[in-house]
Amino acid sequence: MANEYATLDLFKTYLGISDATRDDLLNQALASGSRSIDRACGQRFYLDASATARIYNPTRRIYSDESGDMLLVEPIGSLAGLVVEIGSGSSWSAVTDYETYPDNALANGVPVTGLLRTSSLWTWGNGSRMRVRVTARWGWPEIPEAIETATLIQASRFFKRKDSPEGVLGSAEWGAVRLSRRDPDVWNLIEPFVLPGF
Image 1 (cartoon, rainbow, N blue to C red):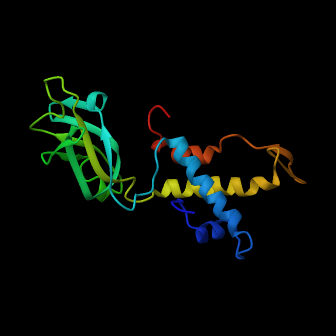
Image 2: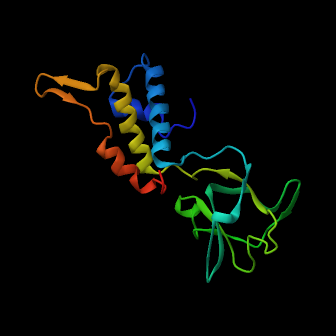
Image 3: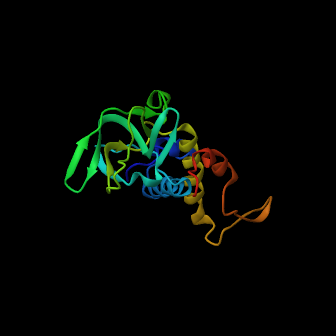
């Protein structure tokens, strides 16, 4: 498994498990919990190991104000290997006159989500089909604590679900209780990270 938001050791401590007999099931629950948080938030929180290129049509990704033209991009978690180019097809020109946004993002443990040009525009005025190619390490610089905690809770639900295949838990003290579709604590933790539209 890869790119889980909590380690197996932490998850076993969280559940009070010390043996290794259920490690496969625990790893599966961690992976499922992590990916379910990705889907709910509309983004992922792990950082790519190496930089890859993505091409953007700037038409609906630009926010303009008095400070300049802001190109909104997917989360960038590291400036190592960051290359920004304008062009199309096989013709690309490097762009260096941009600032990353928000200010001090990586130092604050959050990703860069915008590239601001203060002295020029991201688009050309001649109507050509210009694109912006960004090569970067995509994702978050570090996994937020709230996402790690939400993963532990969600993975715990998935792991224990084997004991409630019909979505009903029972105990001598409380009787039968139907599990809710969405854990309110998980939702409370991830809600600030949910992108608009998801």
